[in-house]
Length: 200
Image (cartoon, rainbow, N blue to C red; front, side, top):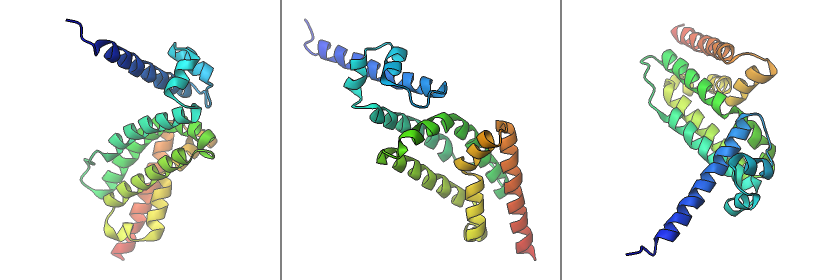
């Protein structure tokens, strides 16, 4: 007996496959350094027609929004895992290590999103929310005497931010390992200074 839903399910699966291929193609192009790929480039990379791209995405901005959602979800999984280190300084170093890997992953997508951020409230709010979540994770890892000190908290939040990482990697031309070492050294100094101040 023929299943009347089979053609519908087949079309749905093909549609989902096409959408996944478009998103994957966009991500590969961005990773390769194409900050603002055209719809034609995405279609060619995904091996679909241009009309198929716009059947699934209203415009390129909505495709960027989907990329931001996918990358943001992956980042949150990494960032939300419980820290394993026992001491506060070691927890911060573990956090820096995690952020270094995550920031390296999201860097090309962040640069691409920045091209459209000025005209997309969604992309802007997604990144703003990520900043809030990263700050909350940092605060939870700190003792109250440091998290309650605005100067120390803001300094640590800035040192461990994506913006600081991007500055080290791009403008200062450091490798990922060198950048991580700089951030770790700076954070250790802040923590050491805070500990000596409390002991006096």
